[in-house]
Image (cartoon, rainbow, N blue to C red; front, side):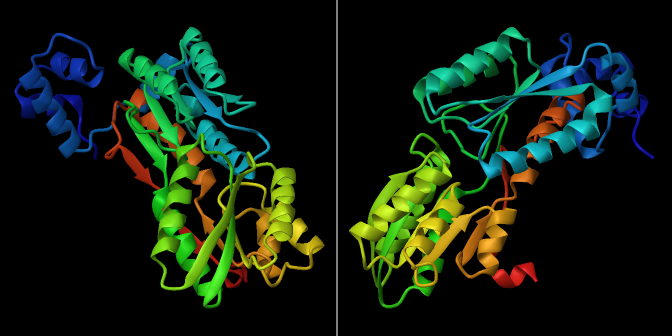
Length: 342
């Protein structure tokens, strides 16, 4: 049986009204008393009466604002599935989700959407942040106004966000480089395609990959690095350019979306089975390429889980008044091969 407010009040030697003030984050409680009550609540895993809260919030829902970088990315589509799953699960407790998509990687556009959410009196925000000082300042301004913010997929240092949901992308880049080292012979030339330098996740993957290649005892060289904004057509074009400029190239690492474009270009050049290819995120179209032997390894980051957790963390904070246990919800790096699919 769960603990009650009456029991918490008895253990803390205070009134039930005092406990209620702490649970609902209202003023009028001394710091020492508040801390004592919070400790007791956490130790006993107290859960508030969510059914009662749901009835109270039914006419005044919590609106959560989610900002994505682009809607044509397969990562975004899977993350949206996780968000909608969480919205359905927590909807009866007064949770509504408003999703906005960026058309570019321009910081001004992201700040404009954050201003829109602010004007809507949004209860909490989840976003894939662009690495920019003005974006950091805006996030910190919103946090100072007690709007909880969860960043996901791409971490942004120097912000007062509630939590980051995603992977250690530097580690992911190093894993990709270690796998590439095993795939290539004693020497190799590698082309890299990332989405954009504006997202820290791609900066970190690139840094981790290149650092690991530099440390390799094999004669491996990164010959070119290009951005494709997650677009398949740009990945196709860059791969053809790689093939023409570097005829000895035998490895490609694509750190974001657009993998089918790489595969199409390699097929056009008859190099699909003699060029090692490593990418991120396991989607149906990637599964097919993995089964055909075009893609050698996929490093998955469970985008659906990320989307779900963004909403859940905000739900826990707003409805249950529970902060995340850590400021980093670490999503493991899953290494997928063709054998995984059978």
